[in-house]
Length: 94
Image (cartoon, helix red, strand yellow):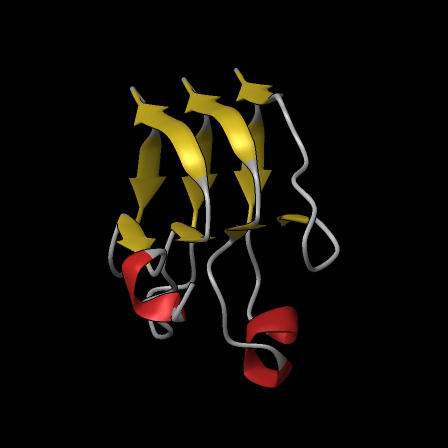
C-alpha cells in the first residue's frame, strides 16, 4: 500500500499517514511479500487512525520497518492482518 524507502546512506521523513481507509487485495503480496506499510531508512513516521482490511488467507504484516527511527504506530484497525508491526531495524546489520 505505502512504501517509503530512502536511498542507501540517506533518510526520508518526517511522514504522516493518518485517517485513511484501505482495502487490500492479494495481487501485490503474491509477488512482493512485505508489510502493507513498508518503511526503510525513514525517520519521524506516524501511522495512526487508519483502517485496512486484509485478505484472510495471506496473513500480511500491517507495518514493516527497517533501519528506521522515531516510528509511531497507534490507533489503527488492521482487520485480518498477520502481525501488526515487524521491526527489522536491529536485524539489518547496520
